[in-house]
Amino acid sequence: MTYCSRCLPARGRSILGVLSVLIAMSAGPALAETPQGLLKTIHRHVTLTSSIPDNGDLNPYAVIVAPVSAGKIQKDDVLVDNFNNISNLQGTGGTIIDYNPGTKKTSLFAKLPQHLPQCPGGIGLSTAMTMLKSGWVIVGSAPSTDGTTRTRGSGCLIVFNSEGQMVTAWSGPNINMPWGNIAALDNGDTASLFVSMAGFDVPGPEVIDPASGLPVTIKKATVLRIDLTIAEGKPPEIAHQTVIADGFSHRADKDVFLIGPTGLALAADGKTLYVSDALENRIVAIADPLTRTDSAKTGEVVTKDGLMQRPLALAITQEGHLLACNAKNGQVVEIDPIAKEQLYAQWIDTDQAQSPPGNGDLFGIAMTPDGNSFYYVEDDVNTLVEATR
Image (cartoon, rainbow, N blue to C red):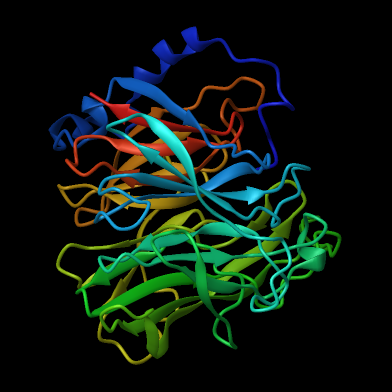
């Protein structure tokens, strides 16, 4: 995902009319009987702001919505981090922007140097980001120094206060390139975070599997549950770490840096964690994620292939459906995980500078507070967009 607004020809905004077109790619006539879901109601895609801060960081990854007002942040603000620096090297971005939907103003929430002693390998802010009800912002770093996994570090999880100041960083043997969007259950004084770790033993992209001609695939990516205690006025502390899933495929990639399990979404009842297994082109379910003390390995398959084209970040709708961003085209896919059905796909990025349109442009996604629309980022033009009715 190395595209940037200065690397591509300008895209005519008239193309946005196409974005409301729904792709009903069903396997048969049974689709007509499927509940409508959210995507069929989405007809407008509104560019809200550039994600590029003053230092020129590029490649927006994580998208989260603030659950509370604290410090610089107002409730329902949208936070977006950047994975690349101004030179467009992946794994080197260190900024988080804050967009306020009410005022339509964008500000810089936090900025980190590329080299940070507390974070092995430095700083490259990934899709792993969340904000707690207590006001703390937690973000993952999946760092590199040359823009490839050849120089990757194991990274860390960084804790910011609500003024955007770093207060601590977590690292250790279970934390290796925090990659996927964080799913969380936040009780205020305690919280459980779920993060995928996709760096274990990944070599540089030049290490090729002779059978496939692609960079070698490693099956060591994990999903880590981090149980936190949060004393009033003090930073969160890790009480327990538990690997609840492992054995996922991950590999280096010369164009998109790294491919591994990316999307995480916790069901409303807390009984299932959904994970997008990008290289296997599937969504899997991990049972009892909040209480299990062992690994479910790669879980149970919910759905595979079909409309999905390397699913990345996940969001969960009010109806309990999943929205999965495709990496290999500009579509988002709606999935009913209980029925194990893929319902619809909609083009949300039709940039024809890529083939197929939108290939490599999508990453982070988050529901709006009212549940009627969603936010996403377009990596090709470095923007935050709202998909709405």
